[in-house]
Image 1 (cartoon, rainbow, N blue to C red):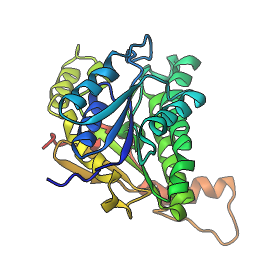
Image 2 (tube, rainbow, N blue to C red):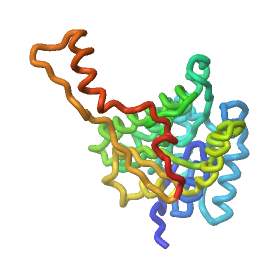
Image 3 (cartoon, rainbow, N blue to C red):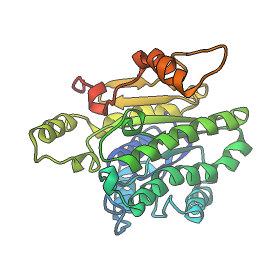
Image 4 (cartoon, rainbow, N blue to C red):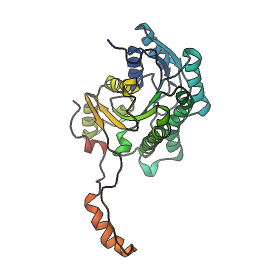
Length: 304
């Protein structure tokens, strides 16, 4: 068996459970030394425990791998610096980062409070920035490094009751592309994955309606461990030319998502007025409008 991440040091945030844990386990199986970061909080960010991170570390070590636990918060600039410094102190370098840590505060938009919005953006978007910025100087200095950020179809396509989460996840798309552009000259790459998996976040979908129950039954088929191989592949040297992309992984399916580009043009040589915008431009563009899709409207087939 080829160990594609042999001797590399990989930080995986939010790796005490779910998708992050499986990525940490797979990275270790591939020969990486893993920094397992997890606050051990509830889904909304409350509480905190070293237990989940240490459990992942114990599992890695029991299988013959190398790992250390970290319980700092990615949402805090100084704490993110400490996570990276711990990797440097213990292992002497850092080669890859998986930005997986997250939380949820789902609520319909007209009822969403400022704190609901800020709490989610702070962990998902600011957390991704904090961690990527913390590793960036080290990646630049060694002229190599890979970052994988977890995005979501809640942002790419849409979901009800997740304005905060969707905004953060779309922000991550822009952040990742900017990192890829700014750091390409240094051999540093940055990509996004939209993971489909049945985790405690997905399990929060209400099941008190026939539709909710049906969605949960489909979601339960999406195995958490299926996200890990492709994530780890993006961290390898063989993927050194893959950067600035948006992928999706759902069970045995791997997707490449499109990125926004102009699809229709309306031109008027003498300029536009409000009248002509309403009478000409909008009717011209309307056939190419996107419907108000939700993620499940686009992914209409069951996981395979």
